[in-house]
Amino acid sequence: MELGYKRRDGVVLDLGCEGPDGYVGWSGGARPHYVVSEGWATPGYLPTPVSPGTWKVLVGLHRVPPAGVGYRLTVRRATPAEVAAERDAQPEAPPVPERGPRRKLPDVDGMRWLAADFHAHTVHSDGALGIEELAALAVSRGLDALAVTDHNTTSHHAYLPLVGERYGIRLIPGQEVTTDRGHANALGDIGFVDFRNPGAQWQRDVEARGGVLSVNHPLATDCCWRMALDHPTAVAEVWHSSWHALPVLHNWGGPLAWWLSWDRETVPIGGSDFHAYGNDALPGAPTTWVLTDGDDVLGGVAAGRTAVSADPTGPVLLRLGDELLALGSDGLLLSGFDAGRRPVVGERAVLGGAGGPWWLEDDQMRVLAVCG
Image (cartoon, rainbow, N blue to C red; front, side, top):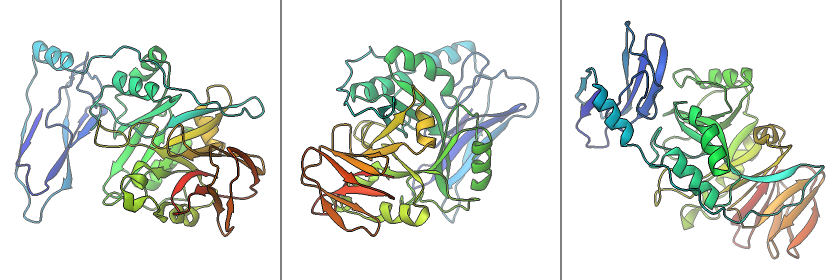
């Protein structure tokens, strides 16, 4: 299947597929064609038998000018050689890299802190790297866990266990449920969440299946959150890489203000939203620290045991009951909702911290770490 149109004046058409037995996949505006067969499909699509019945090409009107745009769809049967050529053109798996330094944080009641990133993309949507390449990059950055959250597809999920085992990292199945009214990450091995439904239905589906739904970059430019929900999500991407993308945003208080007004009990997580080298922050910028019981990363998130720092090695603020532990934070200021500011003295400082949220900032009010 191939979609052709004049890519000018900001026009973007998205592309997807639905077969006789249901949804097959999505590539959005990332590529103009796809191949589907029983043995293999273009990343973003599920391998599916080409069975008799009604097949639908899904065309999303992402950016269309008032005058409209003409497009052409070409659907034809691919030869086995063409399918093999598409498959062979996919990124090759790199060797397992040397692991980046693993930061040692204090265990709590037999649980340990793991370094995670809850937002990243691959060639299964609009990312530039294969799953293996992304895993290798995350390991080299010192991460213990990474959620792979391609847009409106779960085609990457089947590959994650073996890739994670090979590269020594927990790859968390995710889907960035994506519309022009907002994005949310559906985290967990919970199946496809249909982006064509209202946001409140996403929430109900994820909760019913035992997953975690996180509103993404709620203050982003053209994809900020503008959807009604039954109630505020229990988890949110409070810290997105765009927060520190430009010098002018280093002391931008918008994400904190949104968090405090959304729900102060919301569990904060962070996401790099990595797509490609030079295009986004690298995995782990920011880093979400999750206090885990064994390997249950999402269980730690659901229980609210998280903290977020700018990167794996920067200042970090951890909750220990009604106290806060600030590490690598000498000279920074501890601040909280309606709580003023207190100086942090020493590389390891224990401070009172009932309630929350809390964050660490410098003398320019640039936020460097947060916790609930």
